[in-house]
Length: 229
Ligand code: PGA
Image (tube, rainbow, N blue to C red; front, side):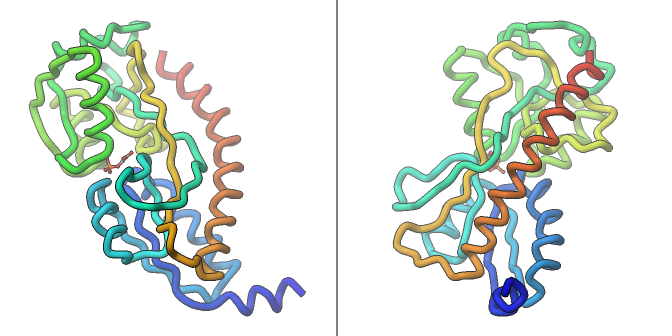
């Protein structure tokens, strides 16, 4: 019976996720823990480089990240889109414009994530491809702090759309060519590792929850785009 099976699911789950996944994963853990009260969880939130370090010393069962490591033998599965968007204060002069050229971003003070951040790496790659040199006014190691700095008028930045919540009313997404940068969140684990029942249960739970979340956000992001124009 299902109840008996659930009772069997006991033990610890060790997760490490990139900073942008913290807007998604902890909330979901609530309902997971209600379903499986015998499972205890240790969750680490760190940047891309931090995840790679933890992974190479085999510290966790599962990892959530946006760029699958090239130099480690891993299994992975994409489960949700993670678009990177240009974020500005809601009252920014560019907020009303459409199809802003990527070169135009070079005229704006820019807020950049810290070295070791996967977001920074993806942003830098796109800028390099288009030979855009932004003026980095501020370097910050936190998505939340960057949002506050944008709202405070220090500059614009590029962050995962998942960092925007219903409280982000003083921020807007700019319509810039070549954006969003399309990325995914992946669930990753070391190839040599036999996943525990607990980890496998979580893996499947998350895939399922992501499907539902994707359906919800498709409708709410359409709503947001209209609201921002
Ligand atoms: P970060 O990870 O926190 O290292 O920027 C986000 C990402 O790689 O998408």
